[in-house]
Image 1 (tube, rainbow, N blue to C red):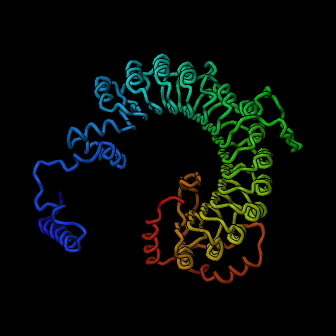
Image 2: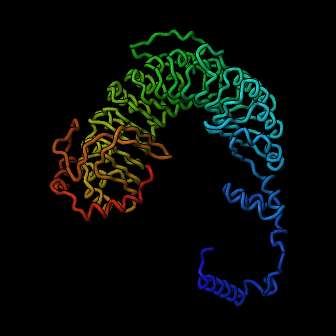
Image 3: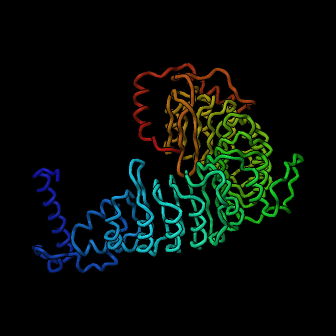
Amino acid sequence: MGQSPSATVDRENSLSDRFSILSSSGFISSEEFPDEIVANRDYTAEIPDECLAYVFQFLGPGDRNQCSLVCKRWLSVDGESRHRLSLNAHSEIVALLPSLFTRFDSVTKLALRCSRKSLSLTDDALVMISIRCRNLTRLKLRGCREISDEGMSAFAQNSKNLRKLSCGSCMFGAKALNAVLDYCWNLEELSVKRLRGIHDGAEPIGPGAAASSLKMICLKELVNGQSFEPLMIRSKNLKTLKIIHCLGDWDRVLQLIGNPNGNGKEKLNFNNNNNNSNCGSNSLMEIHLERIQVSDIGLSAISKSAKIENLHIVKTPECSNYGLVCVAENCKLLRKLHIDGWRTNRIGDEGLVAVAKHCFNLQELVLIGVNATYLSLAAIASNCTKLERLALCGSGTIGDAEISCIAEKCMALKKLCIKGCPISNISIGALGCGCPSLVKIKVRKCRGVSSEAGEWLREQRGSMVINMDACEIDGGFEASVSDGGVHEIGVEFPQVVGQVTGADTSTSGNGRLALLRSKLGLFAGRNLVACTLRRWSNADDNFNGNL
């Protein structure tokens, strides 16, 4: 399709030439490769079904659908080997369910999605699915508003091998989830988002028989997420807890998680003397607290989980340096720390210095809206020698001195993201000479950095992936860094191109910084010319991937 006759002839000649070379060299003989292709012969008939199914595993859903139309055998092999299925769960699909699951009788991962404008499948359809999919281990429900507590209870009784359940924008509530926890003994992951049936006054959820196997709980946008308190407290093997944008006060729940034998009424001890003998017996390793009402009391409570390696404190305005100090002193295995201070100035140098003092295994640090200074960043750069990923976003106190210190001392740093900070070309020069392990750098919305500095950095570090832009006007700011990348919405700044700030907002300086100023001062008096701007804007389009 889409090939001209000449292109087809050239391709045939090329193939014949290659075959003649192989024949003359002795690699293959003419007897093994017949001159004529036998019509209506299935050359895949000798391939075992297991091998054919293995090949299908490398194809996407669309390609597999096309392959299933080739012949009856391929149709059968595709149906028997397809373990993942996603369906549009509107009410009209009910009549097709028997034939669908007769063909796909080996499904273990099922996703049912229904749009807001359509009626979803009902309880009877869900029970039919549970009867036909006895090997189901993962279920995702989105927008299935016609499924009730009774339907989920019947489904749970037939799906005792279920390991992962994710439900969002559904109408069932606590009764359905309790049935799942009672009958699905092997449940490992539970994710609940915008579940309308969980409201004020709802019955407690859990612990149930699944409490011993549960490893991850994720709660998003719930009115009464505190109803999961029994489940969170009694899940002794819980590794990951995510509470995102849920209403209500969460300090008491976190206190009970940190100290299951307590009554949740402990007072905050400002003497900074934490007694590890009262530590909870849970095995939490990852905690996400985002846009919820939690204070230093809650942070102090979760700090008793000494195995925590990944902590996200995002837009929790009541958390301060004290809570972060408690976490740093007790959670010495911390590897990833994300803090979005929401520009409240409640978390700063004091908490970050404690992190530098106690968390030597830190590999990833994200600071958004946190006014860190040279004091704390120098301590982190000196003590956290394993730091590989660093993001500094929306801070008015991070300038050339801080970045120069990072460039000089962070020998293991591989990925760096700087957004909305008052740095200049001096910082780019420091990064060009320091951070020997740096492979990717992203500089956005820093009005003191010109594109000429980026060009110089590319010349100095040719193998480094560099993503820089001129200053842009954008509304709002949000970012996060991990192995998966950086996500941004922007930061408010006037549009200035090629301008270098005259005053340095850093808190201290050194001789190295002065030397870099003298070497890179030639950038300060230059403005971008149109050709340079066009050339580097086109080049930067190739680096639109996140850090």
